Image (cartoon, rainbow, N blue to C red; front, top):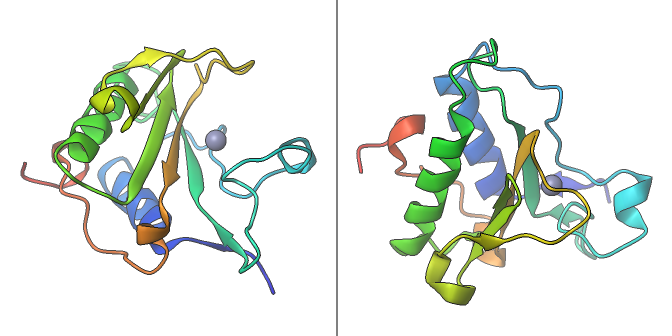
Length: 142
Ligand SMILES: [Zn+2]
């Protein structure tokens, strides 16, 4: 079975692309490379072939400045905190947010600090649910 990105991941990436058409995609990703495949990662397809993570390059403007990803990462976090159950966790700039600690940012101690991209992992609720993410910086109104 060929791997597929979960519907929530497809939708979130689409909203980012729609709002930032000129963004740099160098550090974008979804399916794990051989390095990811050597360890557990949401970038690796599960038994059903579903990948539950995306990486979005930090450079949303495509010109490095303004540096908008810190704000978008925070809006993703707040969206999850408000009850968006499709987001599992977010890693960006040496910090991670998840339902653990009620979606407060806490230090991320993994080897990759995620300075160049924002990592978003999705829950199984996002496998088939590609509904709109109500996030102000990517088209929402919240
Ligand atoms: Zn990632």
